[in-house]
Length: 140
Image (cartoon, rainbow, N blue to C red; front, side, top):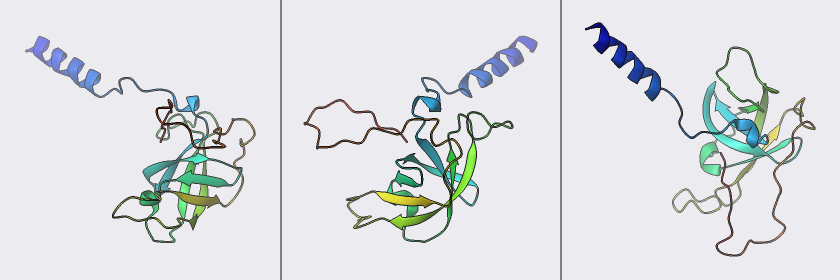
């Protein structure tokens, strides 16, 4: 019975782990989007005060959201990296169509500049449309 219980505990420990994940700071411009204290989506910090996210995450409400900035583990009791929560408001989700998911982009404006904004690089924005078949990394 003791061996069986130990085996069950071992399986529980193994299945509770993330497999194949990467540290968030590989993409330090990523932010978590919270609504009422619950993580609902991710976004990319594209300027000191602007976040690009998916319009389907925001909906039509003008609710204030909170961004978790530069966090390796938002649930950690001791914040890591430059962990910070900043209020944000919906700015523009132009022409988003929830039926077709066309134009699934939205810009949020941060209430203030993150304290570590200069410490981490931002994503490189494309200057033209990449050719079909170009390798890309999707984050969020």
